Image 1: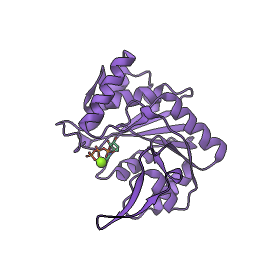
Image 2: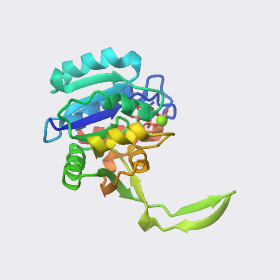
Image 3: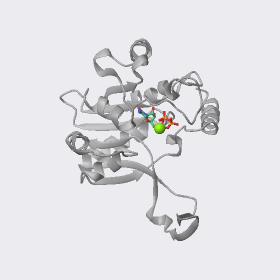
Length: 228
Ligand code: CTP
Ligand code: MG
């Protein structure tokens, strides 16, 4: 394959408040992680799948993926993550096969992301040759606030709520990770700090991130409606 998808699933899920790491919380007939993996494996092209999990879950995850998945052993890698999300992404980047030219980074917490969004991001990275992130318009009116006072109303037309998968030419993302100093909330910010151009393509409401218990209830409802 020429595309790799790194699924980061090594977070603890503090805000969800479950005993198990968030990616391993049950959802429908599987877990957040198994749903996320299903989205990746539904892509129209074969990909290298790199799954990054807490160190104590590596062996179990590898066994389950190879038992269940339509994924062949040589295309699936499971590795341990790190303390920060970006440490987990870096651990995944270290596993890329030599022939990979496009890398997508995806949050397992965006468990119900449709396969088509992965396809669209990968295609856009290829045709444009730079970073690509899915984004949705911001619906709320947004204010800049200082010391509890409204400073200004930010022009909503200039804002996008960005999601994952976020895609990059491999070399650009690897260079950005080598240069990265400090903490970044997403790969687009880390890449932009290294001077990589990042474009926005239309996102998908189903790519919402499961963060708090209400998000998990919404996901359960969507899975039940889909009969999955
Ligand atoms: N993630 C990761 N390694 C980390 C932190 C986060 O792989 N050290 C992953 C999470 O597993 C998740 C994605 O990054 O799929 C987005 O992070 P977030 O939604 O913040 O998940 P958590 O960090 O697990 O949740 P919380 O911040 O509530 O603890
Ligand atoms: Mg987090």
